[in-house]
Image (cartoon, rainbow, N blue to C red; front, side):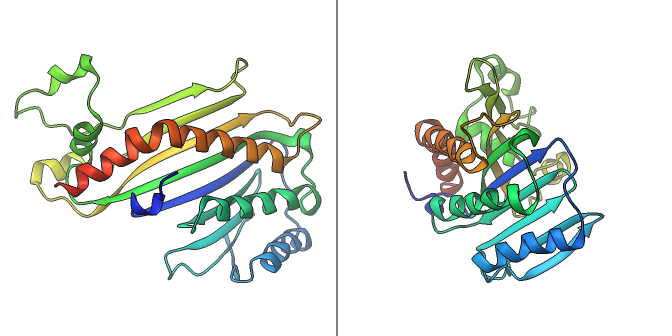
Length: 247
């Protein structure tokens, strides 16, 4: 797979485990979990409480590449911003998922959903919506609606969601998020903002008997890499990068 760092300004790989039952929120339990994470990644030393029963441990963000993980009432999250490789981020998420059954008493039955999310940001000063339309094209049924200089595109955020199995237990969603408003288009003043592409692969329901959270996440990652290699990089990321470069 091509070097994602050459295509985007920032990218990140996140893991999200949603549970059916509330997670333990006791001081000793939460701190023990984060201590285990810190032992593995010593630079993750910034610990704080964000909201009620929401706790975060993260690295310093000054270098542009950093790790983080958080515990919420019904959710465990782990993220790596601008990792040197996909494997580096996946190893972190696998470690967190290996800890949660013991440190936070999360049973294989207690899985509401498990997500692998891949985010790609492009910094661009201009009409994000028009850029997406120019780079990726419009569906034929919509092309004639924007012909003519008076019909300027002020909102175009394509998204698609598909199942990856017959039971629809595993799904993927590809979406593009623009940050250009009608005000920006009307005034012609476009701040430098990030245009984002998100690929999320998600599985629903309890784990099977032969699964662990680690193996389940690895399967999601493998499916995501297949989607990236076959469709997303060549059809989404590279055209967006090229369109920004020639402007």
